[in-house]
Amino acid sequence: MRKIGYYIILVALMMTQAVTAAPAKKKTSAGKNQSSAKEWKGANRNIHHLALWGGLGYSGLVNKYENNRFIGGGGGLIGVGYEYKYDHFILHAGPEFRLFSSLDKITFPSSYDVAMMNSGFSQVKHYTFTEPMKENHVVGQVMLPVMLGGTWDRVYFLAGMKVGYALLGSYSQSSTYSSSITDADAYDPAWVNMPNHGAVTDEPYSAKGSNTYGLDLTASAEVGLNINAFLSQAWNEANAARRFPWYMRVAVFADYGILNLTRASQGAMASVDEKNVYTRSLHVSDWAGGRMNSLLVGVKFTALMQMNKPEPPKPQKPAMVLDVQDTETDAAIAAATVEVTPMQAKKPRTTKRTTNSKGRLVMKLNQGTYHLRLSHTDYQALERDYVHGDFGDTLRLAMTPRPDFRFYVRDAKSDSLLAATVTFINTSNEATVASASTDSLTGFAKLRLPLNTNIRVHVEAANHLALTQTVGDIGGTETFRLEPIVKKRAIILHNLFFATNKTTILPESEPSLQDLYDLLQENPEIRIRITGHTDNVGSDKANKKLSEGRANSVRDNLIKRGIDAGRIEAEGKGESQPITTNDTEEGRAQNRRVEFMIL
Image (cartoon, rainbow, N blue to C red; front, top):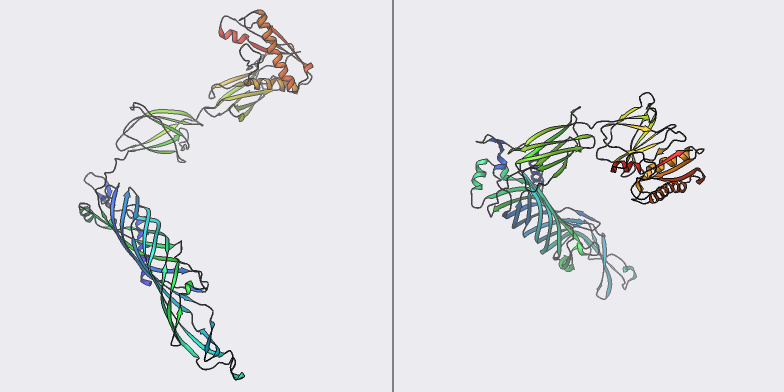
């Protein structure tokens, strides 16, 4: 057993060295460095093997008897089967025979009594075991393993299940005992319960019998080395040239029964006091749990005979390695979206990938010309064409940070700079994207806004009407002009929308209505008049009615929000007061408006 432990440690050390050591390199005629360990492997798809294997190690039957001392024994296995390989994946199956032994020391109640009759007298024979019972089991099983795993140049592993049934099972017992006899009754009262003749001391006890074991379900795993990878290149080349190449490997393995072996004792004849006593295995007695788990660990050797010529490996696509950096800082840009579109395909299909935390993207592409488009929320989009060759390329592309959005806030009448608060809102979810403030000296501010986002800006300044409008070019410069709060001057409600030829206010008008409500709420002393206007399309009467209806719709909306009805007047002017020509669509759109005036 100690030698088996040494073998296991030696194999584990070899595996550690195989994983950490770099494979030896050989200079080929083509001038490329290749691993000699890889040269023997060749193609690795759809390979079929005849597998032969055998193993030796430590074994045992782990029982549930609470007073048991598990010692175990020696065991082994031998099998023949089939193994399939596809790239690094392997499937292993086939019958095997396992034979193992187990030794246990069991301490049960130290004494027990047996009632008996002798010459008409009632007697009790007392047995006392003077040392633990030793019980040895031998089990032979036929198993069907089904294992899955992976293999690389030097190492491999397998894991799976084994289903089996025991063909044979036997046990033997040995111990020592002492005995005595007492009379339960006798003619002479002095003899009652008095130890007498027939006593023995430290007599040997032994028994043998057979057990019938049942179904066993075993979890199995092994990890080891591919021996061919450590042999010379000449040997591997000669082996690969054979009709049936051979491959060898060595591993450490472990099998553990999870279903538990079940069994029925067939009994045994034991010699006690020169008489035959019918006994049975202690593991199936009233003192034990009646079930045992199988255990087998050790070293395994496998030989594989390749039965077919493998499929040649498909040619590998050369890789494109893309590094994306900031033009200003040279820092890596993570999470940049890269769109790759083949330019020569009849039906180009764009593939999207993102750079990793180091700003790198690796893609395997067929040879050809591609169009690359890089985008990021904090950078300007970048596009370029790229020719992908036989051996791949490493590209380094730099993206320019997106420009700042610059803006001024001015008085609409005097053109003077204003101290204002500017809030930018994402129209898709109404979340605040950013905010900034301007002062009366510069009236200027800048910030960066996210790309590909619909943004609405809300500008507020003291003694001025709030302004709400959408942002066009988020990388440009814009001036926001606020109307001063002045009585008796008409102010157009921008971004107020109605259904065509109707008085129904559309939902996208909400920001403008909210601004007007805020003005009335913050200045409770003012009153306003709302006036509707139309273009000249249609009759005067119809346009008059439409303009009045739209003005009243705005008034009703403000009243529903809580503004006193006495503070709001409404009227319609129809087409009578245009602010520009009605000869163009653009002009007519400007004439269709709603104004308000502070009274």
